Image (cartoon, rainbow, N blue to C red; front, side):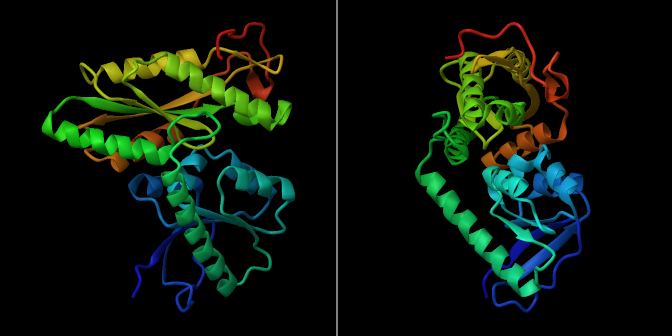
Length: 304
């Protein structure tokens, strides 16, 4: 018998999928996005089913700080009554596998959709692993980062030395896209990547973790206290305004940190800790850019 697919159900009771030929499934219920983050910290499920009762709930899901983490390893399926085209497309662009009409959805159809979403996610992960570069930034992607960390951690087991992983969650890209368009948001994301790379040593690794997060692997540090200082320096650099399409833009940053060996000895555990921390803390920055209205008089001229 095949291994059951783990389904995390958010915002509603688990569907009855027990007898479906598309399974087997095991379901776990949580009532809120905050509770879902606690599950993601422990072990990502095969699929996440989010039941959104209205348009406001869809918007909250789009603003969920842990959305990038949720779609990194799990197939995200959203069910909403008569989902609007705009939010549905945004969810797909952020990494959701499917957006369903919850008003007409039946359990057998849902079982089929969940199984296919999981299989599509697995194919996507395999393809990303084969092609290990994030095309928008030219940085290594999630799979390449994990592979590099795994090799480095094997070395650290033989030759012990402290190392650390920093995750930077960036807020402000969506506001730029809304104001200036998708290409401007991509330009801003690339400029953020350039700032991060410029603040590090050649031996450090910068990787892209989806649409709004970056990872920095400090392959060696002199002391565990060095990592928070590097993280604070990067956050300060990234928060300086940017010039995009003739407009001054700013971003805010939330930081997550995982240190070896204090917080784990394998790549998945370290990355999960850092991404969860970045998703659970408030962003800092965008002073003078309140309420997502981008203002400013000074922008960096050397982000290219």
